[in-house]
Length: 143
Image 1 (tube, rainbow, N blue to C red):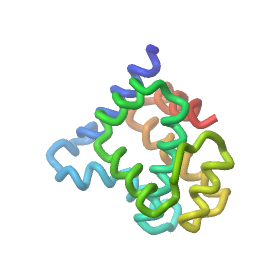
Image 2 (cartoon, one colour):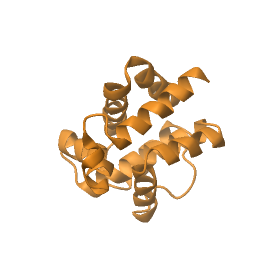
Image 3 (cartoon, rainbow, N blue to C red):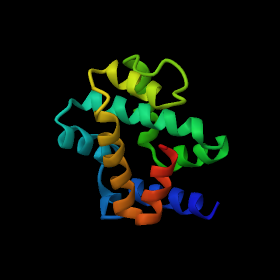
Image 4 (cartoon, rainbow, N blue to C red):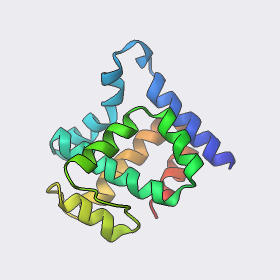
């Protein structure tokens, strides 16, 4: 539970301005991770958001409902990513395993090799602001 609290606090800080982002428009803060994913992996913004939404859907299946609600409240972009994944039909139900995640990625034109790459980018994004404990916690959700 200690790690969950640390993780959610970290996500909150990421969302609301660890690096002076608190004064930026909400859309800039919300899209920071999606933009990073799109740039690092040479994919479109919609693909990036759908990939993130797919990963978050998978994480949601592994987390207690209350913990995911806390994460949802702390990271405003979370709903945007989940919605994008649903809107483009990458996610049509719960993603419970790696095969489901690969299938969701395939629906937006991303191969199975992109799953660990984008997951690592997301994990690093969390870890860069919250340290190794936050990165490890997020990585453990994806196993």
